[in-house]
Amino acid sequence: MASQMKIERMIHEEGSGVNFGAHISNVDLESASDTDITILAEAFYKYQVLVLKNQQILSPRAQYEFTERLNSAASMGHGNKHNPKRFLLSPDLNTVPHQPQVQIIGNGFVPEHQGAKNLRLQYPHHRSSHPTTIADEDDVEFTRFYRWHIDAALYDDAPPVATTILAVTLPKRRMQTVRYDDGTGDELSVPLGTIAFAKDKAFVRSTRVEYAAHPYIWMGRAKSHPTGLGLISEGKELDDEQLPPVDPTSIQILPMCWRNPVTNRLALQVHAAVARRLHLANGEVIDDLERVRDILYRLQRPGIAPQLVYAHDWEEGDFVIFHNRGLQHSIVGSLAEDEVRIMRQCIIAGTEMPEGPEEVVL
Ligand SMILES: [Fe+2]
Image 1: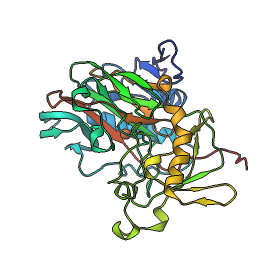
Image 2 (image 1 turned 180 degrees about the horizontal axis):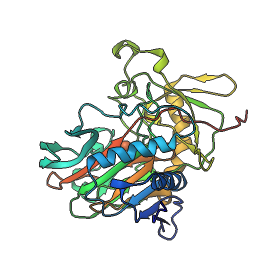
Image 3 (image 1 turned 90 degrees about the vertical axis):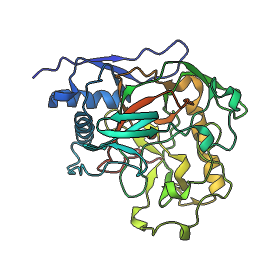
Image 4 (image 1 turned 45 degrees about the vertical axis):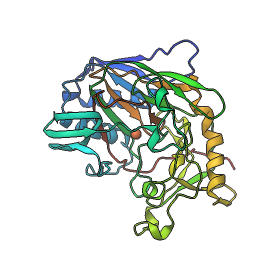
């Protein structure tokens, strides 16, 4: 059956260097055909962020099945059977009771949503993870990137290909200014509670990044750089003996650049907060954590320059699909307790590890 789907490249404001994003319309995700999924998967790799408006009626089941189908379409040709049970979930998150692969995130008190009752959602605020913070009196007007990241366990499971998020309920729209607070004076005006996306242009072809074992436990006490990019080194990471038992085969050493299987373009995809060592092409291993972080910061900071960041302006019903292997993203903003927000998010582990450059240049 022919698809009626419409794909329109996003128009960004003048002066913006953002070169990704597309709007998708004329497709019913509750009953998408295989042809629709194939077209969507291609658009997903080409544009990195897809936005579908007015998806309020999308059921958690349809969101899960769609995310799963997109993952399967994405790994076509690799012959691996996808294991749909491996969804990414942290135990402190709320889930939809009848569709536990879909998480409920947001802010404020929610008496009931999709059968989940008395939810006290808390939007992450940079004060919980940054060493310095915006003064309380400026907190309404100014904010920071919470933490740039990839949605990935980076221990055992392969990084998810797509993350999907549906905006169910949003607080009244207002603007905030993101301060970089790194001495550059950089700022970015964003809608409240945006999710920010950035794509790095640097090509670092031959180095691999070793991620820490139990990475999020390991760095749980460490603080972010004020730009939300990577961590500052204060010796707060846990020692091996403080971690749960480590399975050495679960430790991931991944290329710095991940290749888009459709466009063949490389993206600098490093989750700097959980990176532990660098393996250089000449066999040298950089083990000094502060040095590892300095190198990664220098490589990644240009990619989050204000003109390269896409800050999505959420409207209720927006369904956003983003390429988790081609972009980094960050939560942004500070919501008051009465600014209720409900989002549904689905993230499923990939079937195989991301591929690096086809030809490694030594
Ligand atoms: Fe995320």
